[in-house]
Image (tube, rainbow, N blue to C red):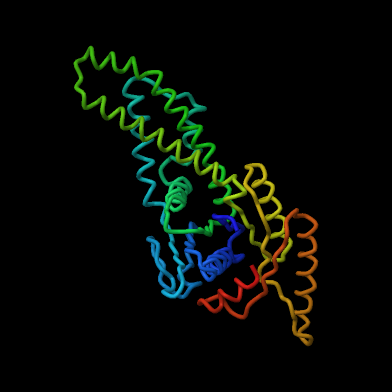
Length: 311
């Protein structure tokens, strides 16, 4: 078992259920486990039928299982402050980044309103938390997840460029301040901003290293047995491979296993699903795990355990 498991896939395929079930399985085996939802449409509370907040909350008293639904908005202000201060100070000195540098900064997600950068920062916080043996992440739908996984490299590069530019003008700025008789407070502020940027770059590099380490991290894709889902999952796996993110398996959810004989629609759906499952086996170079279609929504620990038995 890897220390960190990330579930990804399009919306509505059951990522949250699979993440909750995996966390429950680890906890049932005696491991302190945290399941983290970074999906804006939080539903861990519904799946567990227990309150889950933006602070790690114990789901059950009899097992060491914790859940948290994070709100990346809480961290976005930090990026506005750190990067905004650096850009404003450079402008005050009459220095502007060229367009390619600005594009990198904006693309990196440090621009206001981007959730992914804050989610990654929280990801690292939980990784460093000694209370948990295993952490399971329920990520946002595919597009957000891909931006999330691409972000560490782009942010690290953007921070590197900002730090480099600041370093190049540091001695000039110090000379100007000395000549103008500026106080030490400004210099202290400069140093603190430099440290913030370098720390942010270091954190992003650490996240990238962990995400690419198959000994510590695995990414599991979730899909349903439909043509469009198979094709989208194939594209997701190709993207993961391009980022060197280790994908370990594909979870095919909502599979009809024993269709009612007298139900023509059930029989036809079952046959169609079997074709899509076979297509997935041929397209994906990963083991497939099949999870059956359950009656009604997965709601409560007992229902989650049914899924956990298959994972």
